Amino acid sequence: MSGRRDLIYTTDEGVEIYTIPGTKEESPFDFRLMFKQPEKRLRTPKHIHLIVEMYVKHAYMPELTLRLRDHLLNVYDSLKPINYYPPKLQYFEKSHIKKFEELNKVGEFSVEFILATTELIMIQEKTNYPDGSLTQELYKAFGVKDRFYVINTATLQRMRG
Image (tube, rainbow, N blue to C red; front, top):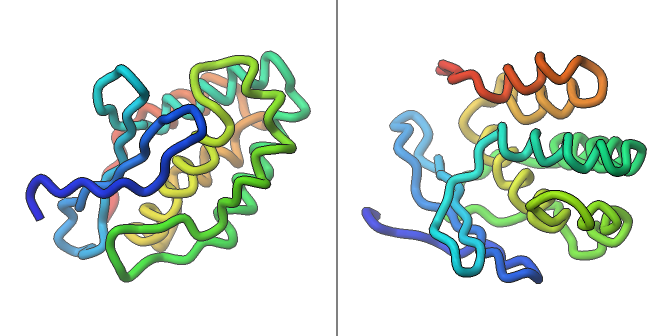
């Protein structure tokens, strides 16, 4: 599987979201997420990128951003771990974008990108860490706990196993 890269989703802005097989021996369906914006190199989204993006959007429209957070927490609750590779989106539908599209006016990432990428990260975490999710923890804390706590948590290298 070396060198394998699977295109999972392409946003309307042309951002390609890929997975590559992961390396966790105890999780045969582990994967890593990557994305490529037009005219840019392949990158790996990290928790900190998504949380900072949420704070940018929150500064612009707090109420709508908190509704997006709640939507993402509902997504997490409805996802199932996977026993196949490559993963596929389980919950996301293009119609979900409409109610949050005003948030596209600020930040680097579109709501479409956030919804698709965050769902895939959540699927990866549910598959590899059935006892808890850093992403779920971050979104539960977003808008509730102070920014320092949330950003610090997003940057921690967590040992799980």
